[in-house]
Length: 72
Image (tube, rainbow, N blue to C red; front, side, top):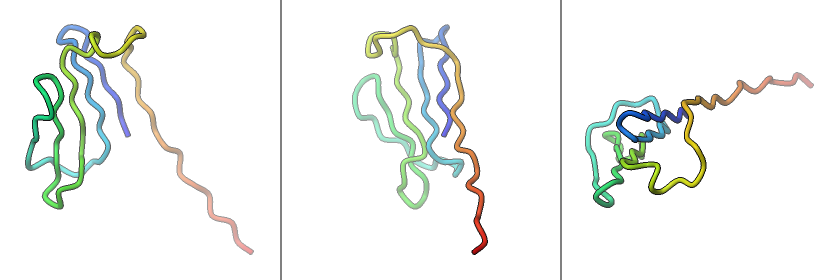
């Protein structure tokens, strides 16, 4: 998962899947959801993000670390 904030556009994008988006659904004037061809949520875009989020916004990336397998 990646979370990107563009302060110039005041837009926040949450990428949930690496799969390409083939469709988009507007949830509201400022929120839209990108869907894969399997209709899974690939990402969420929030425009005018500073109106919805209380804290200062910074560009950051969250990455899940790979799990180590344990041999028994």
